[in-house]
Length: 194
Image (cartoon, rainbow, N blue to C red):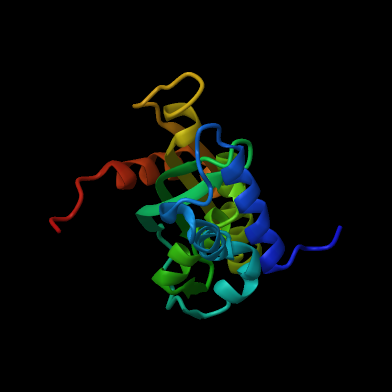
């Protein structure tokens, strides 16, 4: 299957707008909507154009550090592959380095790489953990994601306050309960004043 060009994508959005019963796709407020939708999709789904190895390729000497490295509360937005509804939440990403550490912004970028695709939460969680394990070769990697899903809030069961949590534990975080316990204590610790 060939990838449609921009004009075909715009035409598809025009068709979808025309499908909405009672709507007038040619009214002033909607005239530029197909272009804006395609522009927004280029940003929203930019994760397909990124390579996780390049995101995590800039490492530094860990200077013997062998404790948990945790970046918590990394906000993200994604799109559910089942209904094209948004979901958003926060990710907690941890690893225990062997000899190399990665820049903190790289951990946030790897979340965005996976979130900026048509997704399900389980795949984002697993994908981030896989990348940490493959490209950082840590003693352990852990990813915990908490998210609210538009497909649960604005359609179907309409549960406004439900939060889905997923986790992936690798290496010592999977094998040793002490490592998991320490990680969970760090995640639950009181946030710094902002």
